[in-house]
Length: 141
Image (cartoon, rainbow, N blue to C red; front, side, top):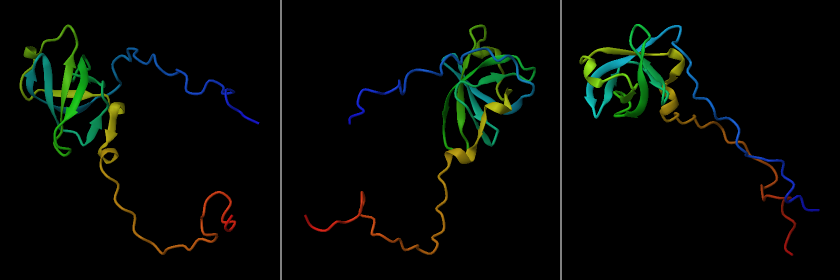
């Protein structure tokens, strides 16, 4: 009996539509300081031990949204990020070393991006059955 063609719509669409305005967060934490502006975007040097989500909103201390994180780059211990500004903002209106803030719910721990340490080799467990796959060995022919 063949079950081909009887799928029930696996893998179809779903999700999506998550680009709603969440409004200002209850609290913000410092994410970094302004290094430079480049082609209308801001380049921030991270001061935080956590890594932000892409497209996470960036705020001033008064919780006014400035823009969203566009790219994260640089060495993992001193990473930087570019911020795509909101349409009503200009990069020239910010001072060097001005702090910027982020919603703490939009941060991931650095350990998510580091290789996992190898597990210590314990005693080997001998398995029975030989592991020949599908039904074991049945001899020759």
